[in-house]
Length: 389
Figure 1 (tube, rainbow, N blue to C red):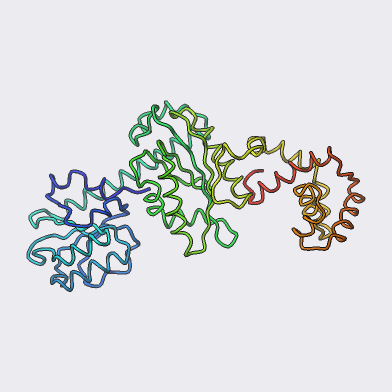
Figure 2 (figure 1 turned 180 degrees about the horizontal axis):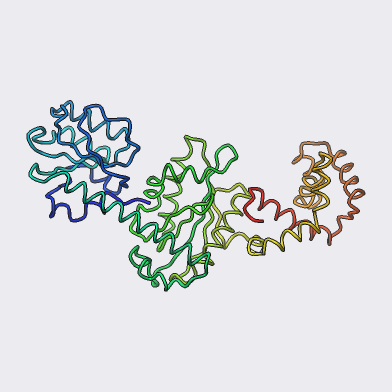
């Protein structure tokens, strides 16, 4: 997804005499690209997470101008700035350094004798190479999952990203919604660096890639405290835009041999979270949903046809809600008062409609029928977003 500023700048002090002057708290910022900017007014074409280089030739020199310039970069979500110290900017004023420290905005110095084109070319090459590595890593996970290839076939790819057989691995599946519609693809495309920074804020090996309308995450040595912190940051980032997310978490397994199973566990837990409208669900806690999510789609569809198929068709054709009534009846263990409260109708209406349902569909709603209808309605609940069948 992205390379961190710290990783990008490895070895640059020795090679280019480029030094971090302030803002060390932001050294973990991710870098989308690098840009030369010489105008006092920071251009609007910046998309965020760019590392900015400047010589000050465009009237940026002077304490007030440089301060305003750095503030504008921060406000436009640049990840840092490199000042080419020379005839236009002789030094970085103290108040600029203090601002960068206070706002975790990395600011570097680069000697005038170093050609900016050399270091920017180097950085662009590193960014591109990192993107290629991320794509290769995602492809390796996809191949192991979809094609049932052996993880050992991609040992070098996994090792290059830090994934080893002696560390504990966990998978997660996330989906984002806005106003009732999936927006995962759009969120990933426009916020890849931010998502990467949220989930890659530690040194644990991490893979993050989209899989249709789901974001898949594999991470080794994922401590609970770091997991919770990441989800809190994600929620804080999503809330202003009215975006909600659900996440399903697999169990932990040592090594890479269990990748396909962990992937399926994470997706099952995600369906459970969405069905219960909960933010987070763990596979070990989803009960009988494990069986439903593991079943073949054709088997589930056949089961639905023989249990609730006629009910669903009747509702569609006549505008009735017998399916919702029967589901509520079963979930509340036959409590008429609870069904009435849930559906917002009178208890007499519930009794009348139940009588109609029994007659129309030849139901007795005895223990045997209820035992068949219960998993059928649960399958429908898990498949409300069309992700199970």
